[in-house]
Image (cartoon, rainbow, N blue to C red; front, side, top):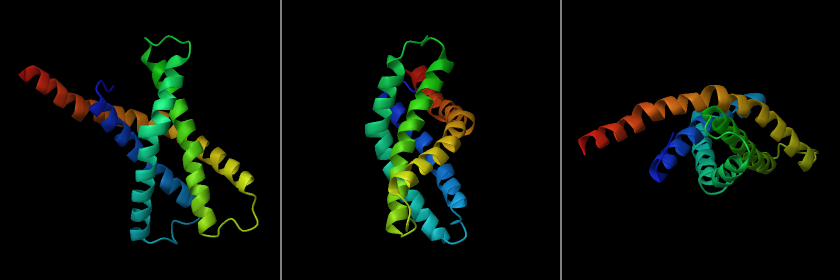
Length: 163
């Protein structure tokens, strides 16, 4: 797990990138838009969404989720409890905000004609959460922890052994 602010930054961006890529394709597929958008359009959306999600994760959701998760009364010496707690609050916060982003995008592109904004928002939150939470726990979280340990922590170990 990250120890320094720089490592937290890298870890957050790696997690954010994995979740953004997976969630973008999930939403394109579930809304039947994957065949209607060009590759260039998808890449532009990925960049836009990544920047938005990264800023949210780094400055709003991440700090709040961490504060809430670590303030709960559970055994923090058990790494699995910390991971589950952080994942739950991070995913919840990001789904709530990024579903607003998706709702705004749908509204701007006139895909909400005749639909209630509130119903559409809660439908998006539900659809996104039921995919995002298992995705974070089973795929993205373990993959990012593995890559982080392999590349970022190995560099730290090499630097520490040289000093």
